[in-house]
Image (cartoon, rainbow, N blue to C red; front, top):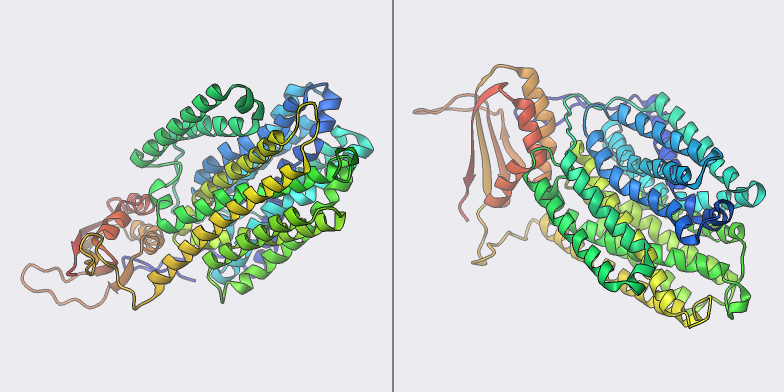
Length: 586
């Protein structure tokens, strides 16, 4: 199997053998499921942790928050490491950290060590994007798309799998027994990775932007802290607002660092691509809505009858409410790759957002019977499953293979922040609906929260439809680009490369492997490559490459992209060529 070269030399791709592929797919899925389920173990165990360790519920809540925080910080770092030559080592080392953290949660140690263990377990959340990178590199294109969608789905429904099991073990053997489940499955995931993970393709290089990682970690720490500390907003609004401003400033500083760096943690220029930016906006707002409904239903189910509503379910039985979420989410994830052949990914995002909005409407209108909660949770799961399966397709359509892990890592950071804000918003609305001297909010507060969720999913739907409209205009051959100022036809841009000498074919081959996806992601179309050349005057009768872009600005941006700059590093002094970017006639 060969790749599409830019300079005229075919480059071998790195698919695994068919028998190995059969083992690789379940391994990728299992690892993604395990890290998601283990990170979510804190959710059903908060009350048990508070009782067992004699700490407040607020302190026990950090067993969940710290996992989300460490996962959000580790995800872009692992994504960058996973884009390099040491991806297998990165995966194994990360799983080793997760196993060590799982051991800390089981050992009879003080509460601080439990938090440290939960932080180590959360690091595993960064592996989901790496699993996608492995699938895209080592599976046939038609197979990899379906596997990537499945990985995205199981990273969501993992919470529904781990929640009831952990709750049951907590009731039977205490909190240590529940965390023991995490130790067993993470050890199995490490063994699976050691036996099945292939090496990364040759020619990759990746450097971690330490400064960017530190600034991003500080910003995310503030964001997730503010999302989790609801009392801070109600009792110290000025302090909370000040910290929010600091978080925004840190994020701006981080963006500047990434734009100026030669090896950014996240390719911000690629993130600014309208398709990627729109997908991340949809993921952020949609994540708020999806997690809001998840928390509303589980909290409502556990509210005792004395509040005038609710079902007073135990933690384990309440966990069973998540089964429809997981089952229908998995079904939607399996159906989505088939539907994608007929419906574009952005339209699938919009349709899935509408389904989640329907789950909110169902919960708002009918929740007096437990079966209605199961139905609402099933609708939510189907919508989330479809949304999660379609999201990678939107982003990876404009992302080179070498940047798969990095691009999806950023999307998962956005998702984590959205989920955290969804949980916080739900808590704030229910707290506002709790009367003085009451332990539980009024039933109407849940309706208010559901209406807010419907609004969030409406915004998500509109963002997804805007993406679909843009893709339609880009793929419609009868729609021409127009100049933003004059309204006339926008002049196209061209790369013109004439190769004088090729001193190192191996470096050229490495360049071709990286440059092809970079050019494609930047919107380039190869018009001529190594074809016959008749040179006159001072012309060069050597290999010539001509690549067309929709605009001159697009051609310049593609050359300046991090993906193409990586290709230039691989090329180094391997050739002497005449390269220029030319503006066409509008």
